[in-house]
Length: 248
Image (tube, rainbow, N blue to C red; front, top):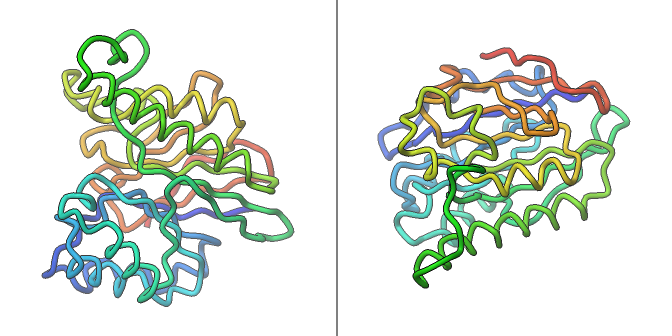
């Protein structure tokens, strides 16, 4: 059994030191890996990244992350990534992945930030103005990088980690008008094509936790305002679908 803890959208600012740490101290006894689904900071500054690093350092288990749109705001992505890695050992994924041995099983996690564009029937298309083409092509490029990263994993079980949603299911509760800015169907197509066991995302603060891709892969929105806890815990039984999560 593989135990995955996950949370996103913690939005830690410079005054947030210690906010989550008490609930994380015994996480290594409950989970095999912690996934962070982006928007770890408020404004993407190096000072905020250091708060994140201290909050999630030395937990006794691997911590993997993707960045979110807030983490890009200060145009300091490289520095933020270096701080998370260098000061806390948090592996930030963007078009790449990691394979972890867990209880005799190779768990592969691939991650991207993702991007927007909407979902089939109500989505943007690469037609018309150059700006619209660039917008949609950026989403397609990111989906392609997730596809490559997932396929390259030499793993028994694959998990897709992203910030933006791959399906509309987990957006229920959000205004319909902003669905195109919360995710993109191309991400969900990749998850189905590669055959991941689970997809984890954040970003949709007013969405819901549970969803599925068109092919039936479980999708979990772990934005903290949705799960209302320090993390959610999901269990994978080999290649079986994940059980409904518990929160802590």
